[in-house]
Image (cartoon, rainbow, N blue to C red; front, side, top):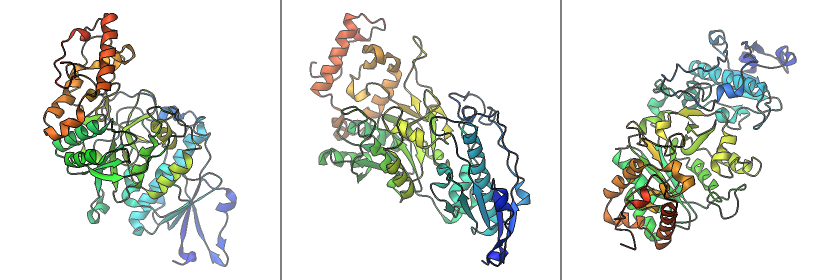
Length: 464
């Protein structure tokens, strides 16, 4: 395309650039894209609150309004040039972070609308000292939009102040591209979660999924376990584990940056990652409609990385690897790191990642809601306990995770598995020694829940 025929839209640029009308001896058609600056009263915490009322319709909760241009005035742009303001940083959110998000969303919406008219021949160039919002544009300063991905992102709420909409608008560009999608989990450093991964796979299959099941494993998983994991439904891919730079040596999360390997599965358009201490209760295939990064909220303003939708990308994986030594994880593990990296995320309902955590319920009903899609087993895992009751009750600091109904749901999946798969869920002597120790402590403390009084009938016990 000839330079002289190009129409260039300028977003948040300086007067000097706006006044430039030539490039060499070519005339430039420069258009200032005008939009109202967002109110300085809007804070980042307004966009990403700690809690929202999910019982309300998805679009009835309050989200601040981010003004957009009148897009009809900019129908035929060939190039967009945007100057992105710098924010206050990951730990010091200021109004500049809100403005930075607005500028990026203006660019994204403008590109989506222009690409539809220009058959994909629209580019964006980012200028200034601060780059684009990587959750939208990765790290590309010169970018030709991937319409299929970008238009899903602009349909999302501006932050986690609203739930992701229940149904996204149809994407006509997908007619010639059938997306490849899969569920993925990771086992590394030991075989402690082989039983959990087998049970997770069986629960996903039971939900009548149409997606692939991918399991990433390292060299700590034995050949025999790999055979049974395959029989359970997983397609196995081998990885080298990744050390967590800010985890303490010997802790549970020392190697859980291995989860970052999921971004290397570029043969897939989208993945839903699920930790191996989950079971699926209802089909969740419909949630592949959402864009990266979509997840349920955790106990604070952050998302829980146990169930999340991501879009594989070599560029994104390399960026995560480069940043892992620079960006401090608030909990030493992958969840803290990913929340620092993906500040702009989309809120899925908590029933997609129902945390078995009843800290707000001291007594009374601890049943799992009937509409829950997936149950996340916090605390002591079911296969590491007696099947007779949830042994989290026997540990004072874990009683918040106690739920006999939730415990029973896991064992229902176990009972339906073939016998050769159930053997990976045997209670080892060391596991049982721990359970017996906790049970004795509960007996000596005469814990009022009384679970320590229950007679053990679990055939996995070594003392029956």
